[in-house]
Length: 168
Image (cartoon, rainbow, N blue to C red; front, side, top):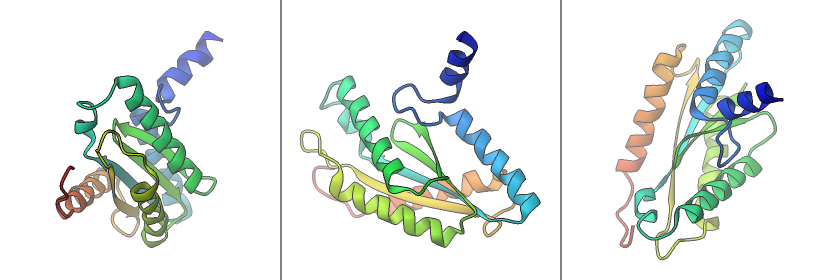
């Protein structure tokens, strides 16, 4: 029993129940190996919600955790079976699309982003905005050492290109 409980604590985010960052990264590595053998594509997606840090100045930590659970649940509900989701940071989620090209994954990520713009309840005047990015095997790279930085570079570019909005 304790071994199973310890494994769960080391695998899943305690707040959202999603894969934690190390477990998600391990899944990406495993999928890369499997995809190299089968010549199947896959896509690593990132979703980040901003302005996140402002939320902590306006509400209690338990409400922030509730919001994280709501976001995690929304992401999982919007995705097809077989897509893996991990919590990489307070406001950043990883999405792993097996046997999916970048273009196919971006369509699904865009649908999640649209939901995020409409469906997230604001907290005391803070409206969260989802930003998305992706990188794929083999389209963008054949190594995770390149996929992760590329996905993050694209996420940063998406964030930098956002229109400035009052109150955010």
